[in-house]
Structure formats: C-alpha cells, structure tokens
Length: 305
Image 1: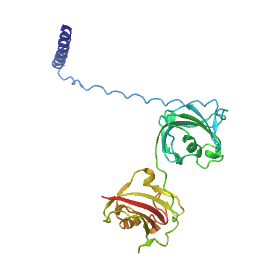
Image 2: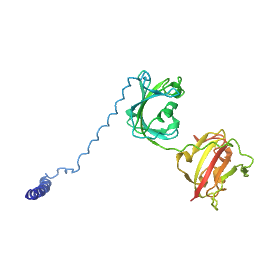
Image 3: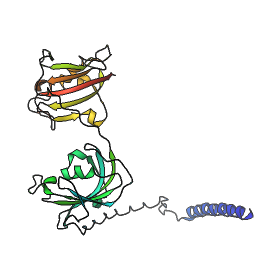
Image 4: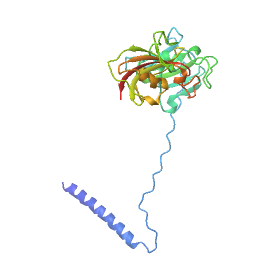
C-alpha cells in the first residue's frame, strides 16, 4: 500500500516538475526569440504493405491426376482441403471466392490472392466450368479445377485478354448467398393473347391473380412491387424476384407503361403487361443497358405508400 502511495506521489511530483520546467523555459526564453511550437511533428504514414506473393503453379498443372474426379462435361476436379459446410451453392447463387488461374504450362494469368481481395459474383455469370465446379463445393473448401476449353473461354476467345484453351484453377469457396430461381418465362411472352385488355395508349394487360385491395394508386403514389421483365424473345433482363427484395419507387418516376399499368391494379393484384416501345425505353434504347422494343412484365403490387 505504501508503495502505491509513493508511486502516485512520484507521478504527481513528475507532472509538477514538468509544469515548472515549462514555466521556467518560457520565462527564461531570450527576448525576441521565436515561440516554441508545442504541436508534435506529424507521424509519417507507414508504406503500403507489399502484395501477397503469387501462388506457385501446382505440380499437376499440366493435367488432371488419376485421383481427380471427372464429370460428364469433361470437367476434372480434386479437393485440396475440405470445408466444414454441408450445403452446396445453387446455379444462380452469389458466391465469394479466392482463386488463382494458370494455363497448363504453369503461367498464372489471374489471381484474387495477389490482389489481396476475394471476388463475389453470381454463379450463372461466369464460365461454364466455374458454374459447374463451384456447385460441387461446400463453404470453406478449396478445390482444383481442370477446365477444358469448351467450358472456359474457348480455343479462340472473343473476350479481349481472356486465356485460350484448357485452364487450371485453384478455388476456395469462402461464402455464398442463396438467390431464388428465376421466374419461368411466360408462354405468351411474344405477344398479348386475345383475352388481354388493351388501353388507348397501346398498353395490353391481363390480371393473373386478383388481390383483396380496393384502392388504386395514383400517378404520384409510391408503390412497392415485385416484378420480372422479359424481351419478347423470352430473355429475362431484370427481376426483383431473383434479387430477393421488392422495389419501391414513385409511380411518376418510371416508364410510361408502368405509370399507366400499375394504376389499374389494387394491392395484391398480379398482372402481366405487354408494353410497346413507345411506353418503355423506345424501339432503340437510348439508355445504356436498357432493353429496346416491346417489353413484357409480370408485376405484383405489394403496397401503396
């Protein structure tokens, strides 16, 4: 206890001594001398960390060994280390991975490991060998994939900078997020059937399921909907269903066909709209990435805000 009191008194004495010293220094500073700047010098930032070294090419990069498993498509794979999960990602799920890719001669052409950052993407948006191979994996697993050219970028890639021929990847599945299956393409996507109603503007629609609501939204309402949109050749170009989250927007802030069509609905209704180009994005899309011509939408009105 005495030792503790001594330590406290000693600390207090040291602080008092520092204050006295500072006072004496200020009082004894020669007249006209520049004042001492009490601000400490800035700390120099540390240099950026060096990027991780490139993973070495596997000893079996030139071809799948005898113990690798091969699927009917020609994809060969081997588990490098096992994961702890039991579920496998689906064809449309979003996966997060670390990966490195080599050509069979051992030349590395891409690696998230050297960038120090994993990659996240929908599993149906990559080369076929990845879509198939990652679905064999569980979370935490690392697998080596020997991918034939027809499941990669081909022997003569059309994508600039893409490697040609067979490729080898080491892929570690860090995580994946479930994404619902995309909605089925409507049988009448190529044109409105005879029982569809048509407005003076040229909008055609059909109620697929009646809701229990009584009020219709107005042009200045905010609405919450689930929707999917197709071009008339059956290509799905957008869907809140596959994203797993409804869309909320002001009804006067969307394409004319939506502004008009959703006002025909009540909460709980699900409708199909055939929207001519003049009520959508035009017959020649002016906005990058937007579809052109007649569009078909299935829309479910969830609420009016």
